[in-house]
Image (cartoon, rainbow, N blue to C red; front, side, top):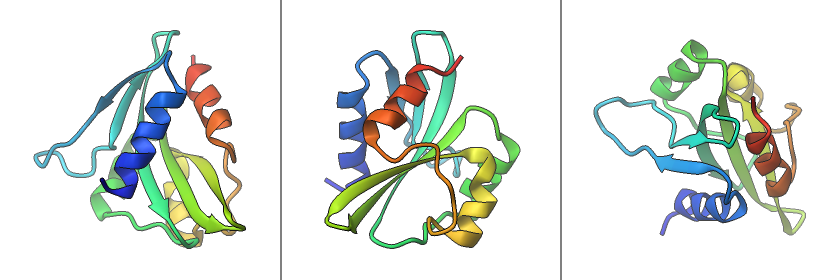
Length: 125
């Protein structure tokens, strides 16, 4: 099982009130990994990324998706190996250009724990 699949399993376990659909298709490249639906009836997408450094790799199609769809789109990054603990960054899709240019080093993320990221998804309205 790959790192993004493991992150997906952690996210699903931590968010029992959210309905998740994993999007895996080759026909519409750039589409985020997950479609979420919370109890408020809000749909949103999440791109999953796992990294050991500060730079995050995106395809041009992934960047284009978030530029074209800046609302209710998110990038959830699990940073491994930093200070011997895992950090989670939740970045709005509208900030993908900044994330690509600067990486995690200079970017203020929405949340730094998986629990806080999950609360953000649950409270979208």
